[in-house]
Length: 158
Image (cartoon, rainbow, N blue to C red):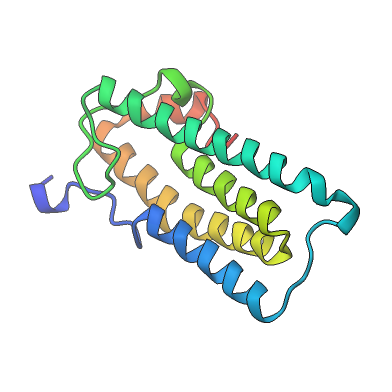
């Protein structure tokens, strides 16, 4: 593969997609609030949102650390140099994307908005179709059997 084509051709940067999902949810909630949880659960919202946010950050950091340990990049606009299958990647092929979805869930719970769950579902679909499938196609073409065996052994999401 030539250097400029040695990438998966994703539709947009996943962190930007995540911020767009969160922004859209909060904007929709601003104009038309639809509570996610009943008011009697209001005391639980903040701690649950905090746990989800911490889990999201931990998962993302673990994925990034594993990429760096294998001297490859998490940046989907740069060429991958290896298949990473250890650490958190032994449990999910997409820990950072799971982290992004978890962060959207944290915002949904913290802001008590059903729009956050709608945004989470939309983000899941966009990530799956516009990012993950393209990355899988790229990695399979680049690493062949090595990636295909990993894909068979480890779930795409969780």
